[in-house]
Length: 437
Image 1 (tube, rainbow, N blue to C red):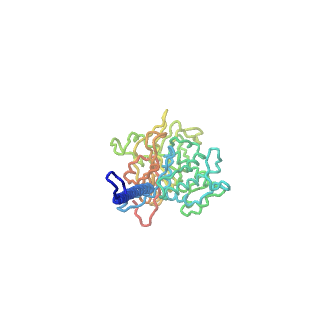
Image 2 (cartoon, rainbow, N blue to C red):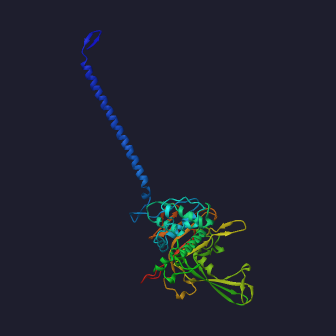
Image 3 (spheres, rainbow, N blue to C red):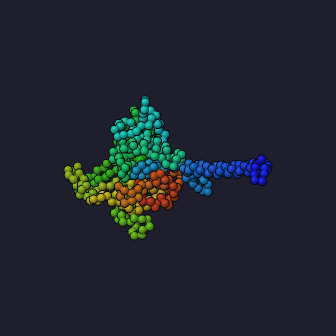
């Protein structure tokens, strides 16, 4: 009962209204909370979905279309650690030379730390002894990581640390020459494989490998290893005295051939430039093996004349390697700086015939002198101390472009237009009944 100016009256209906209004407000509040929960749930779900997409971006970016079907891109890039593109380009090229790569991947792992330090991360300093590092082991780990397909890019920092330890020329983060790095890398791999690690010689594996027979081996600085078995060839160097006609012959092992770009082609910069003839790889090989008269600064000490005389020099290839590495000499020193020869050199992707450069071509088989391209290292820029290195390589019938951590599928036409710095050719395997291309 409520007292008012008009008297007492009942307010039960007002209480009911309050109850109803209260109930309505509660329902509205619940609806609002439900809608808010739905909105939050949708937002959270969307956030999880985006996160999932980001997590799977490495896998999604590795899917490509081949003949209308989707297939996984299993190639892995290499992170640039600070002007280390020179190293990345060489590592990607070597990883696609199957026989060479498979040898290292099949090596047993080496435990570099024992006792209390086993299994622990070590923080490397330059004061640590060289006996705690193995170039072969870190090279093996890097090759194993490159074609697993589990990540888009691998960081070769452990390998780079070992390079710093055993190759002082490559310490620091300045740009380096990819060809120079390749030679140092192969030489040090060869030396470590000869001596083994922790007293265990790894040359035993080479001896047990039937694919690398004694006839394929070329000894450089001691016993043969997989490095010399794959890349090793032999040159015959003939020098003739122009005064008495005395001929001197010398056999020199090699892991690669450095070829000059003939001077008449050095102004031609692109493939489509029409002025003058096109420079080809055959022109560079011919310049390397043609008879050459040595100038006054390279007089030959004739044992018959007992003094230095004018002479001629000619190279023959006495033995071809299983993998022929050709380095085009694009950098030349002048009085003050090192200039780059930016000439485009046309090179074959298949069927490079080396028979005409052999010392005894009649003793070679029909297919043993033919080579197919497997990798190309390219230098972009104007000087050896600057610019950028990338690599093209063939893997299971497809060509890839390796630009540090980025790997893309490409085609033969694009590869053929590249201004090659280093070319890797693999000896074609003879097939029974196959016709010569």
